[in-house]
Amino acid sequence: MSDQTSPEIMIEVVDLHKRFKDLHVLKGISTTVKRSEVVAVMGPSGSGKSTFLRCLNRLEEPNSGHIYIEGVDILSPYIDINKLRTEMGMVFQSFNLFPHMTCIQNVMLAPMHVRKISRDEAYERGIKLLEKVGLAHKADAYPEQLSGGQQQRVAIARALAMQPQIMFFDEPTSALDPEMIGEVLDVMSTLAREGMTMVVVSHEMGFIRKAADRVLFLADGLLVEEGSPEEIFNNPQHARTKDFLSKIL
Amino acid sequence: MTQATIPTRVPSRLQDLREQAGRIPFIRRKEFTYGSLAGLAVFAVLFLPRTVPLTPAGMAVIALLVVGSIAWAAIFFSDELKPEWSKTLTAFALLILFGFLYYRYSTAQWSRMMTLFMNMEVIKVALPRLLEGLVITVKIAISSWVISTLLGLFLAVFRAFDNRVLNIFIIAYVDVFRAIPIMVLMVVIYFALPYVGLTLDAMTSAILALGLNSAAYVAEIFRGGIMSVKKGQIEAARALGLNTWQTMRLVLLPQAIRVVMPPLVGNYVASAKDTALASSISVIEMMKAALVEQAMLANPSPLIFCFVLYLLMFVPLTRLSSILEQRMKKSQRKANV
Ligand SMILES: Nc1ncnc2c1ncn2[C@@H]1O[C@H](COP(=O)(O)OP(=O)(O)OP(=O)(O)O)[C@@H](O)[C@H]1O
Ligand SMILES: [Mg+2]
Image (cartoon, rainbow over all chains, first blue to last red; front, side):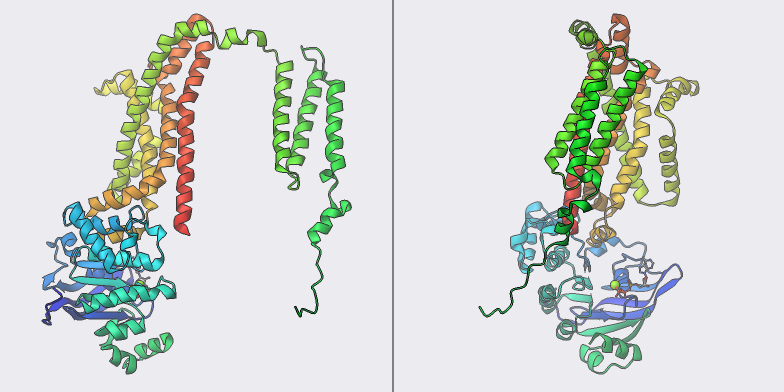
């Protein structure tokens, strides 16, 4: 997958709406993400960034609109959502590792039970992934024995174990102490370089500048501005964007 | 060293307080502690009755002594400055004093204790039936555990799906079966159900009543366990592509089980203790067997034997429940750091 460089469309979102009871959180979002593209999503708190991301793998059910992944309409009632989710890894702000399993067990779980590969194969794949995130030596440790940064790296390995085509990150570093943010962003940068398609909710300007191809700026459930990191950071057009950037810079 | 001024030592204000005897409340002072203890001792020696059938005056003296020594101990215990060992000593002294008073003044016939309550001859005669009763008690207990665990887990898992219609049925079940007294349930199952064409033998009725009742509690215990697992855990599992059942089996239940074990074991003990209620529908379980033997042999030893057997069965289980609970709290504390 990573060697494929054709700019084919990986995710297409058309006029996405999401309401929680009376609260209209997403008010018609449309965008596309190409294969191997890294898209950063920014915006003030409550603007709907997490909701947007969670709609993309249907952890939240959108109220209307369309989402196509590789051309497949994932909101169709005929879609096998579990199969679909195996193509999309997700990394959460609060890690959400399974506390009753060791790191390697966390990583092996889904490949064994969803992909039905053998224990040995899952183990081999798991150890390779833990090596990739620099934590092979912690394979048999429980999550509570790891630092936040290490837990998040294991969570990334766990998501990668399903060999997804797309990775979603929802503020993966905002629950971390400053000295641990770097180690997680390094892993993410490596992934981006290897050609993984990524949608990342983050406000880490350095990372976005370096790794992201495009920035989406959400405010009040609307996509108010999008462009390359340079365009957005150096020359924001919309007042909301200017205001927000002036606050976090 | 060029330090010019050495800071003068500031005396602790608490130290002052302690040293100024005048500030220590009267009842905390040595004079009071030992003076009142001596007073109690003198009172006991002078006034405790010498003969056994107690007069009202004698009873009053004993009551005064008991109240006085408890009050003394309460004052002693509430003083943080007294060393721990002296409090332990006090506790033992109180126990010995009360034991002595009871032994000395009760109407019990101590010399006949053994033949009355621990009569080996009687127990030997009664033993076969007591053991039969024990087997029945254990059978009822274990069968009702199986029923309540399976049914309770089933109810809790379906409750977790949070379907409105299912919820109504499950809540109704839990409320109803927690409200009905077990004995009433047993009697209804045994005596009333035959009229609607469902005849169950006494033992089955007892098992069913205990199991149905206990399942309501087990369902609530499991529900609490499932709810104690954070939402993010389920989301992480679903995001990996695990389906609902896999999420339940691999992620939710293993985490819930840790929280659930202590109250679950406690609930098992509770329902096992209620096996004695089966005697009300003519099941000869252990207690009934002991009662029968007691009546036939005109000696309470079988009852005492039965009492001890209950203790032997259930004290280890209640202990296990406490140990599990402590272990869980410890691991939770670690996880929260
Ligand atoms: N399950 C839910 N039920 C009701 N309201 C919700 C739910 N999830 C999110 N919301 C609301 O939707 C709005 C958008 O939430 P969302 O989490 O998407 O914001 P966000 O941009 O990710 O914010 P943050 O930067 O704080 O994470 C908020 O007002 C939030 O209160
Ligand atoms: Mg968010």
